[in-house]
Image (cartoon, rainbow, N blue to C red; front, side):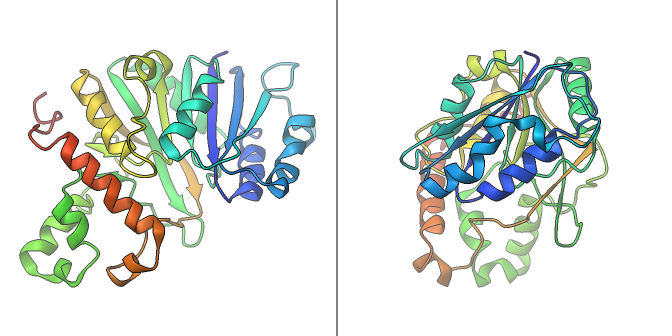
Length: 288
């Protein structure tokens, strides 16, 4: 198997079906499989996703064939509880067999029918790549999503959600942290990329032992990219392939939302764990 597409779902089952339909429209002869893991799977989620396992070819456009004459394998994994993001992804990867892993959020739409082929070709031409990601655009307005970040600094993560971000000195630092100065039309090396859409070689994934399960929901993506840079590989943004997403961020919200929204409180817990893990270490990208 050349490619394994890993989708971890939590509360977006109907969008997952559309995601898979758009995958089946990809123009490629590469053999691929799709492994869908569902955290805290309810009976309703199972009903919504079960058709993908019974006959995935039903979602293909008329006259289209994918991966030769055989149906691409679609495996569904229903987790009774919410395993969290890192553990859920790691378990799904263990149930896959592809040489190249695509870690894909449930809301992704593969608008570019050549995206899969472009990403695999670019990865294979560049052995130094550790993590590769396409340009991502929001469904609502078509704007490029800010999937690129500088390695996190806890103080700036807090300041971003308060009035402090409007202060001149802090505003510039927050804008740099959010990489607002970058030209998002260019292929480039970056500190880290949000794991809403990643391409990673399996051998590197296994070398780094996948995502760190000390985190529950957030921060496992900058952590993994940090370890990729430490391993001598690079993190690359590749806008020649374009995908779409719903643009809804579960970590969105300001200071007051912190007291109402569990995900924001979890974000702070995971950010603190990240800070403790790398407190004394220097940015590995700057050491290269």
